[in-house]
Amino acid sequence: MGDDYRLVYSSDGSHKNICKNCEKAPCACKKSSSIRPEDLELKIRLEKKGRGGKAVSVIFNFPHNPDYFKKLSKKIKSHCGTGGSFKNDTIEIQGDQRDKIKSFLEKEGFKVKLAGG
Image (tube, rainbow, N blue to C red; front, side, top):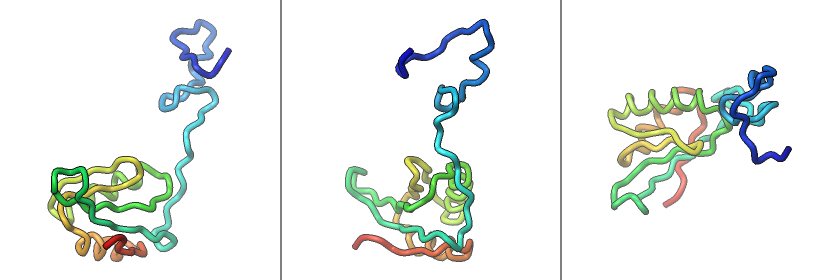
């Protein structure tokens, strides 16, 4: 059998070994790495291109750990009092919030650099 199939039903119980995220057995998902803020240097840039002229502060340079960074994005949004999202291993916060984000992340123990112009 090739890798381009998807198991729909199995009477032998082999369907219980399939990962719910990547739908493969054995699981081929990236493993989440543990996070130690003092070991990470996060970068923040301001983006306007492709957003209808609206500014968005983007935090990037994360290791793979979606659960941790979803929680972190929620804390940052609350701290800045604005909306945003976590997607594609980046956190996007509405508006030019670079200074607020930088001070918040430094209090959390991260090293932070402002990237771009």
